[in-house]
Image (tube, rainbow, N blue to C red; front, side):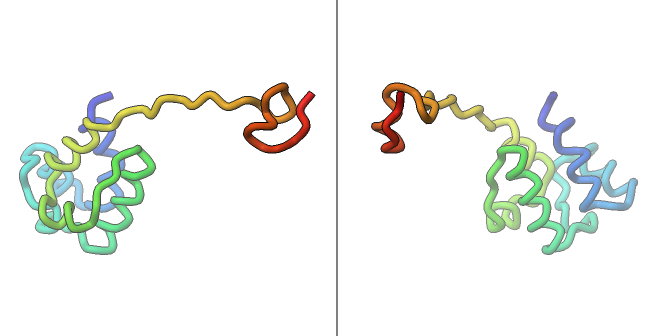
Length: 102
């Protein structure tokens, strides 16, 4: 899924006028605040984006309030490598949790 495909359903919550939402994606450099997003919506949007793995500071969004900027940040999401952890109660877990293990 592209960043734009990921972003559109999220943005629907914060730019409620269908024409304005369409403008945001047709002209991705358009200021989102001029299309109806307010500061409270911006904070909520940042929470939703964080849930998708994109951490954007409020000041960054205020400086770059565009679909283009947000989509570029969504495109930079990387999956963190999994850490190997010894399950509790197995041999060697004493190093991690202090239990006697098996």
